[in-house]
Image (cartoon, rainbow over all chains, first blue to last red; front, side, top):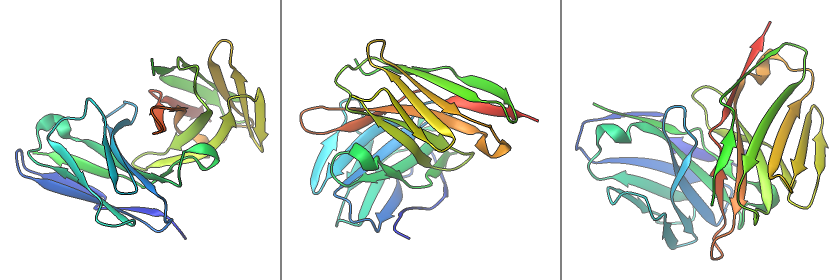
Length: 114
Length: 113
């Protein structure tokens, strides 16, 4: 089945140690998104790629970076994780606009910072 | 503004109907969505409604949209234990050609046996 796959499902990292989360998709969608969801909160958009064009949200900290080497893969890099970065990180894709298809979400990566 | 608000909790007896409410502020929304999130999982698209519609029914799910009041609701008929989850409404907000979803805070639905 076409889907959005996030690895790993759970990630533990040390305070200040760079960490990378990965997302892959078999849907051939043009747009890929990264959301941060803290406990009991709404998912918050960090940034998205429209094809190769990177779009950062105004309030996304510089500590968060992203790479999209090809259509299928997108990475979230956290350069120096702090305790406040512990959250569920959700990757999503959409064909063009959200429209009728909505977004397709991965299962998420839960990041713990120790 | 892009605020989407929901009640945090709802408890319903098994077999009854659940009604989850949402209010939004951006009048330029095109599509409004309902997503379901089970524990430890990602978001699953349940249904959507186009902003020029008043109602949409899909099996046990009924979505009502009051565009004047910017109020959206999701009714789940014959609620089952498998419906226990957090339900997020979301609006698609247009911004300089880059549409994005803005989510509400989520409503945790608990089923009482």
